[in-house]
Image (cartoon, rainbow, N blue to C red; front, side):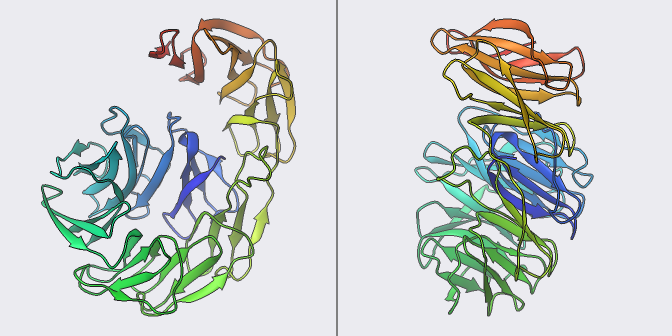
Length: 416
């Protein structure tokens, strides 16, 4: 795992999490253990949403869009991938219609799928000089928050027409319990409720939470912020807040009792490479910690099974880089050196015995060595040397592989 950006439950026990470096995780026991999926993408994933137990979509950097129609067993990469664009949030209008928002520099992006997330098109909004930060659905209407502004934009005709509405103050999070009832959370931690689809908003007294309101049904909603879990059982009229024993960045519940929460990477422990995470079986009243391990200057990690994984390390010495392997799910690690490399990047594990890693041997006029282990990480001989900075490697099978990075002219390059 790396930093986790969002968690969603497709069912009371099956959960998914997305994060940095293309991290896509699945749990089948309400977050107690996690397995890494392989979306074939190393950019950041920011958001995901499930319509039901089978249909889900994840979005992130580079206009990346991943869709599943079998409950997360398989994910298909789709969507227009162009330029320095980023998608920050996604929502289902119905099972077939999905919308995603994001930004390109200072202009908003609005993408639409009408087949459940497989094919996408960009819709010209006619808006400029703003950025969309999040999106929610109220009935057939799509509502997008404008970043840093007390403004909400309402889309009709799937984004071809837009209406601007004023909000009580700049807001970052929005969620709806049904077609008309929703909750808005401001940057100041003040919250507001609507019963007419966002036309007007009333202040919610006694709620000081900063996080996304997620409704599991028309009555029960949850807001997870850094220090509390706030729950409503009456569509946002009143809320009960439970202090958490740990600082949390994101989390969610699968049902009334079971949930999972991810903690931030500590600025005081720069060597820690995994989010600490916690589960609850009593609605957040108590949290069960799940151990994480610290390694020296980690860069990337890849697990081929729940037990076996590889992580590349920057190294303790200026001229040494390493790859560490675990066979017990991360409880213990053993490392091996990539000779003559300064930085180790991009492990890709094809099996528990065979994996690849990239070793940057020179930063200026860079040279990258491609290493492979066939003995489960004990030794890493060089298989090829490439001119340029290549940070990632992927293999479709034992023979066909790709190195991704930049050549000596700073052009993006893919070598097969």
